[in-house]
Length: 114
Length: 115
Image (cartoon, rainbow over all chains, first blue to last red; front, side, top):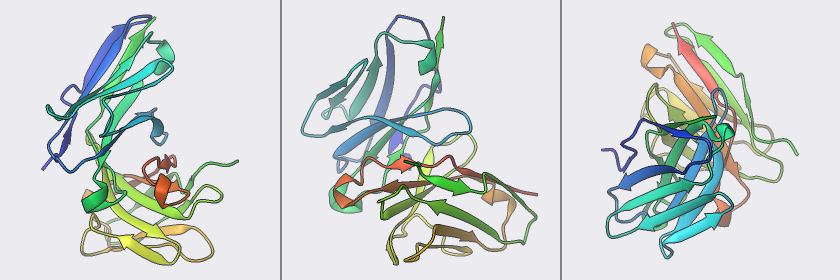
């Protein structure tokens, strides 16, 4: 039962344009969402998060949007840079039922072309 | 300020052997999580520990797998009698305290290959 899904295994964008990575979830108990970035042979690095009481959180070039009614979140990167090329994982937690354990999506490979 | 350390980075075991994976959390962190990533999949939660306590082991396979986080020393994930299906990347993450548990800092992972 895949509770967090990233339906696009890969995304390719031009440098300077916007990258939009999408994530859907099924568990309505999820109340905190995170995005991690992962380079090959390294562990995931925390990027940005959002609580379910918000619908938007912004940090520099990164913005996360949450649509609770659609159970959908997205990560916007603008402008995209070649160094952003990595695998991006969406993750969620449900504090009431499962504490701090994170449930991850399958990841999206982002390639930013110079 | 060193990050989360995991060793070994690569581990090769024959079927039936034991694998021991070590994780040293960031300085000042007392919460440790273990995740497993199978090929072409996302990370899957295995176990959550505090010093000397297992808090949540709901993601651990019922047999052959165990984890500990002693008062002194690293956290250890132990896999007995490994099988080919155990081949995966095992990631450890740490956080400083419960209130910041959601922003978990990951180590580089141990890639286990079972031949």
